[in-house]
Length: 305
Image (tube, rainbow, N blue to C red; front, side, top):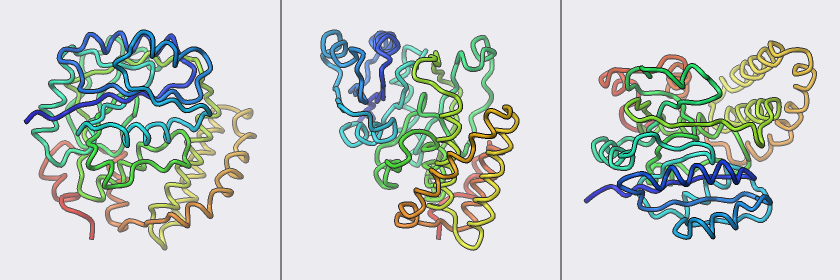
C-alpha cells in the first residue's frame, strides 16, 4: 500500500507568497493526499484567498497569532497522512514527481523520521545555480521550510514544544529523533525552491528567538552534570555571533537572556534529559554529518538506554 503524503504550510500575513506556493503545489503529479494551511493570525486576506481559490485545501484558522511552532503542531495533529511535508509559505518542491519520490523514500527506510531537502534560496544566492548539493547523509538538524516528517515519529516524540513559538524546533526535534534511534537524513535528490521573502522577517528578532530556544532546549534535554557547561557554552556562542554583527546587535543580547530566564520554570517542569552519550553524539553530528550506514548504526542504532 502506498505511503500517504500531506503538505503542511504555516503562514502569517504573506498572502502573495502563499498564492505562488499553492499554484506551484497544484502542478505536482501525483498530487499530495492532502494540503493543510495554518493561517496564524492573518489579517491580509490570506484566509479569503485560500477559501476562494483553493477550496480543496484544508484551512486551520487561528484568529490570534500563536506562532509557527504551535501552527505546525496543530497541522500534524489534524493531518491523516503518514508523512507530513513541512513547507513555509514561500517555499515549494521543484520536482514535479516530488510526492511519488517521497513515498518511495519513506517506504524504503522504515526508521526514517525526517528527510531534509536542499534549497535553492534567495538567502544564499549561490544555491540558485548550484549543480551539486552533496551526498545523502545523516544529519543533526533540518529546516521546516523544506522537509518531510514521519507522523508516527512526530507523535511518538511529542512534536515541538509549543512555548518555543518560533525557531529552533528543528534541531531540538532532530536531537530527540536520533536519541531514540530514528533517522534524520539530508536527501539531495529532491530540491526545494525557497524565495525567502523579506515580509515578516527581522534578523535580530529571529536570532534572539533562536538563542532563547536553544538555551531552553539545553534545559529540556541535556543531562546533569553537563547541563551547566553546555548552557553557558551555547549562550557565549550566541553572544559571539551577535558581537560579530556589530555593537547594535550585542547590546540587545540581554533581552533574550531575560526571556530565557523567565521560561526556566516551564523548562524544568517539562525536562526530560537524554543520555549524555547520545546528546554528545548528536552535538558532533550537527557539526559533522555521517555518510556511512554502518557508522550511523554503531552510534545511533536502537533506542537510547
